[in-house]
Length: 244
Length: 229
Image 1 (cartoon, each protein chain N blue to C red):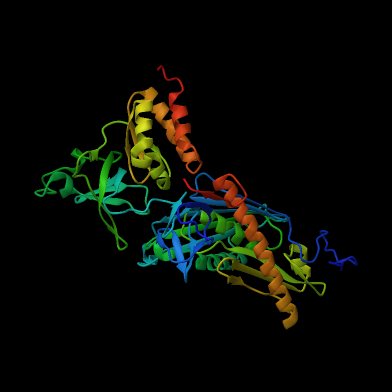
Image 2: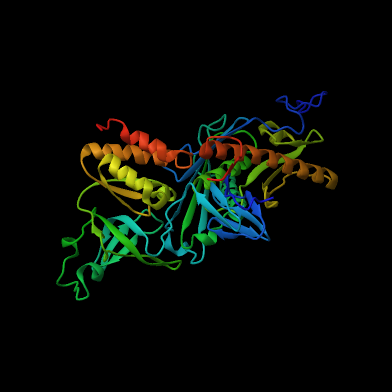
């Protein structure tokens, strides 16, 4: 087995242990959707689109006091090295639910009674951590759609590879490493909206990985903020105007 | 910390802290304790005691007495279904158009309004539990006989109208075409082909640069292009 972390403490793609993959975010890329966003996170390339609020179909799913959220995570047939069957797999069904559940706390659904909000996450090219990248992009798409939100959701994974705690696992580290732990947070409110872990870590390692994941999410939040500012205000820096 | 004589403007995104303290808030904001967070992308105007957040996107939320432009998508014996670019189609009851003695066996709805017709109507009833109800009884309301429509984002309608109607007056006098503005962001333009082209370019400019300073001047510039005076 190849070593995932070399003697200099660098990972297989040359990153440091606490380093994120390069991230590119863009908001409002689809004209037909009410809101949309695109993310490149390492080799991941993902489009998120939001439609709604709109009428609920089938009608029996209507909630009289709030909106319902429907989410579909899907990997394109060409997103992996061997062709992926385009039919929704068990894994995709799970991730759809996970993305919905990590975004729902950020939405003020009571403002949109009797409606549905649709979130589509389409993976064009996959690397590890696509659920986190999907959540990050989908949250921007929701903001772009102008849906009332408590906060933007930022997401990234931490884990254990070759006995070391690392941030933002890629595909090889995810498969050959010991532990993968995706986390999503609402950075301003300080709530965790997604937390999964497969693999084993000691309590000390877990604490370290969790804190690392949070700092990673906060870094991603800064990029999300920049992407929204670039789209809407033509500047990537927050600014205050005085007077009229 | 807060200067009492000024309005502070700040670009915000959802979840961003706008201010801390006892403020009155008007829409698109969330109060947790004494901290006020934005729930939309937009511009927050912080004055001494109130905060207003003008959002830059989002679909139309019906409000009572709003004037909207809609398109008839269907009708049955009781009235018309009208698309007002909101979450639900609005309903225009037949009795509102035909009068109280409307009878479904005697009168034909299609003689008044049919599928595809555009109309200017007021929101006569709406709450969280019911679809919006329309009314066309009122001055200037009813079927739109002619004109081209253009859609702007509903959140930018206040910009199109401007302070005390300054912007809409500028567009109307500059292009020579008459505008009817629906609060849902659909604008009907009536006039010559040339004037409609002019008004369209002005409205597109407002749509794309709604939040930039000096917008009124830019609109004036675009309208005086090719002006003979």
